[in-house]
Length: 154
Picture 1 (cartoon, rainbow, N blue to C red):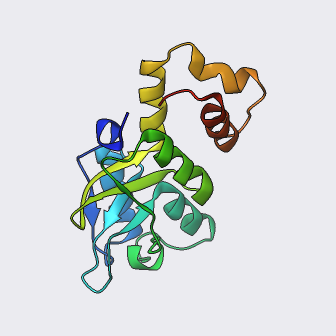
Picture 2: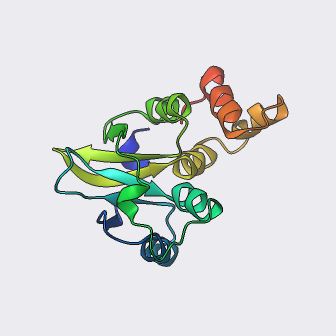
Picture 3: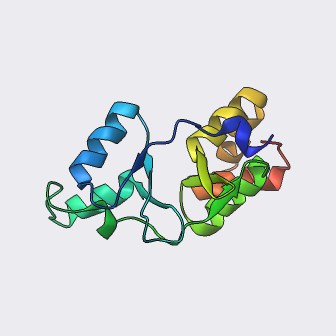
């Protein structure tokens, strides 16, 4: 399977001047865990995630004051629509992140999350998907490594 088969093509885009509360509200309304940040002064799109917002609030920062531009990830790993889901999962494990922006001709055409990969995996392999858990995987990273090591096609 390829990235384009599992990605969410309804991309929430925000600007760097949005407040964290604004973005959290938009993400909640759209039921997504990340937003693409378009900054005309940057080389490419960035990403803001639930975790970025959580870390800011946990640090005592005010979500009504904090701007997305101060909390987004600018050094983003992008996926192409024709990547395999195995390649996407491997990139996520190596990079320690849960979302990939999918680009085509420099434009964000989708976001692929770990949840999307799990959903497709369960649909394609309803019984084999639990094998890494039965073998002792206790974290997302261990589960993804177990999936990759098993040769299970995502």
